[in-house]
Amino acid sequence: MSEQSNTAPEGYLERQMLIAMPGMLDANFAGSVTLLCQHNEAGAIGITINRLSNFTLGEIFSQLQIDCRDDITRNLPVLEGGPVAPDRGFVLHSPTEGYESSMEVGQEIMVTTSRDVLADIAAGSGPDKFVVALGYAGWGGGQLEGEMLANAWLSVSADTDIIFDLPLPSRFDQALGRLGIKIDQLLPDAGHA
Image (cartoon, rainbow, N blue to C red; front, side, top):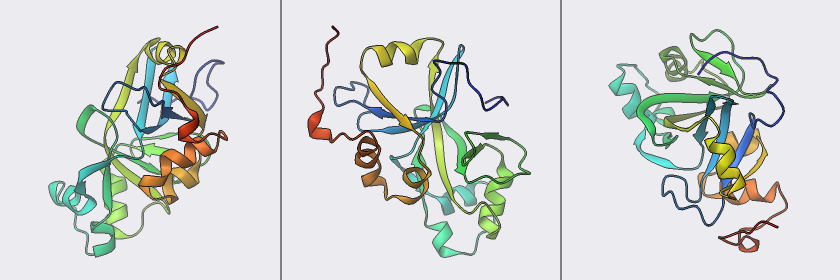
């Protein structure tokens, strides 16, 4: 991810959450909510925020040789951020300056890919709120726009309560609820007039 300003050109979906429509054929995204971290003419990068991985944060700390003595922190779940680079870690967190590789995703969310944020989390001095994910979702230039036109996704403004505070099973329904929609109101296929 590259550093960039907080103002995306019109038509781009940064700081939005993508909600998979019921007809989503890609098993990596069925029933998912994905926070878009970057979207421009070259493509898009997002982190899925409602899929559990097979790892705990303690296992990640062990692999990176980071000491953490707090059992609550060690037992926190790690998410599947997407199918691309599943061995690469991403930390979505409340704004905290000073990490080696961070990017703002709006005023209330940052994403950091450097080890230093994990070391601070393990020491109890990290960001107030955070989510750790492995992998990311990626789209080439124009690909996400095409998927949006094909009704594969709905989008809603990023919501820190959904990202950081809600239990994983409620994130999909709550994201839809921000649009005033319930899942039973959606059809798997949509037409164009």
